[in-house]
Image 1 (tube, rainbow, N blue to C red):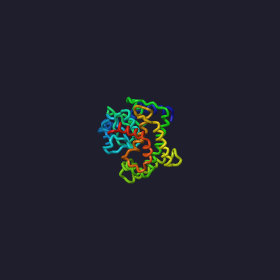
Image 2 (image 1 turned 45 degrees about the horizontal axis):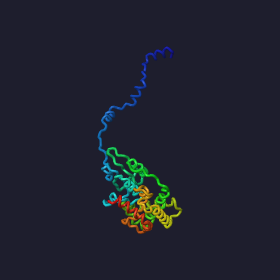
Image 3 (image 1 turned 90 degrees about the vertical axis):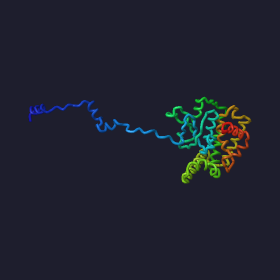
Image 4 (image 1 turned 45 degrees about the vertical axis):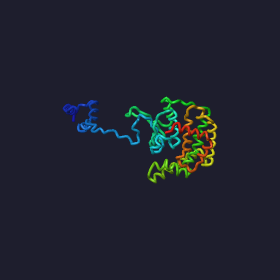
Length: 303
């Protein structure tokens, strides 16, 4: 075959027109007409929003503090039976923050622990975010609450509450078998589930957690040593309070008062059937601490 033949054949061959990049791109991403007609009709159905859970407050114009608390109507807005919850419940009341309390559990908390605060919201469609414990003080100040100034040696006395008294409390409530059966079991275990298997599992978890927490600071868990340290702590706090109404000579109670009240209120609460009363006896040795607890209970939880 000659070069002339090749040229003639190529001349008679039809030329293929190249498509532009834009047309190629648009054709590759275009949808077939049947599918396009389906998407043009979306949304097919607009469903209403899911209803809120039953326990979620309907009136979000109120501040709601979610805490460990009995479901009984007579206990509504009364002091919590949990020291961590009662501390912040009392602190908010001390600063005149209007609030309601609602019984809850750790699983409902955004941080995995109670308490947490649901601030009031004027726009129900756009509720504000929950406030965890580590932001409550800042939030109270933003609401016009008094900003507290740390007093001299306050950290040392706070450590007596957060370590010595708390450690003794953990043993007193969870590891003393008599107190666990008569107080911790009905408050934390029986109220959580009707299943015996779930109850046994939860009871084991509570006691294991208390034991693990105590072993972080104690080589051996010695109840006599724990109670002795708590007694010394109560004595030091009694000396610090003297004849004042509130700690550090303040005219109104503050966070430190709330921290101690969170334990003394529960320890002295006659409605709780503690079989072993070692900590109750330790507090009752100091009348000014008992009066401090009674003063706060009457003044802020009278209802």
